[in-house]
Length: 237
Image (cartoon, rainbow, N blue to C red; front, side, top):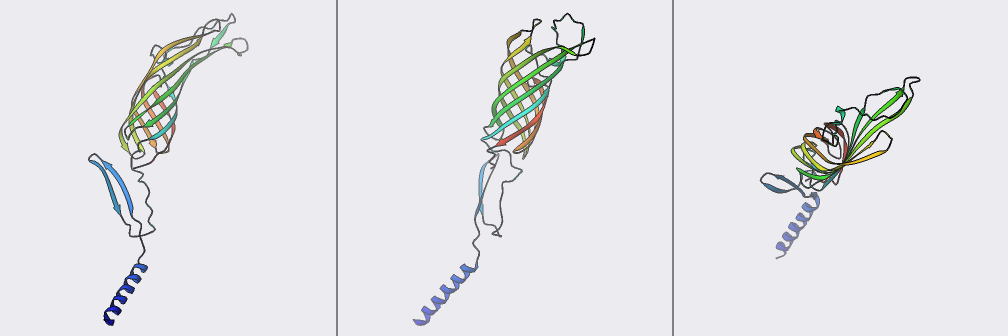
């Protein structure tokens, strides 16, 4: 009997020594998803100091917000025609002078919310401005400036049809309302409402939190639109 108790004590002591000498490794859980569904893998690394971070190759997670600012060339006027195709007029002065070419520039401010990996909803504020100056023949000083502004407010939807980590290829569609502000020959502002729309069949963004993008299409946001953006709440799967 004493021998049995001694053997049990020896076995218990050996087990305690084995457990004490074996490092306790944390178990890690990793989730991923493909076309068949969502999977959860649990495993224990061989090295207790192993650190696991989200893979940079994973697409953007749902519930991601983003802000964008871009400069564009080729924003449309209130007739839907590219504004850069026409020159401003309407100067009213008796002094002889010469005109500078009209300079057009479009600014785009976007907010978006990714409902899931491939679909984003948001809004766009866009401002297309045209400016042309008149200079005096006598001393080449500026006499006057003719101007027009198109300001649009549009809900926007984006569809990311290629997603490879930090790279997205997408299309976007915007439709809303805008206002044209221009000065007449008497120097007074005239306001006209119009339908603002935009379609970008091809867009490319590169980056995760901070990113750059370029888009090509037609509408109020310009023919070629490029800029930078920032995403937050970017929790990866």
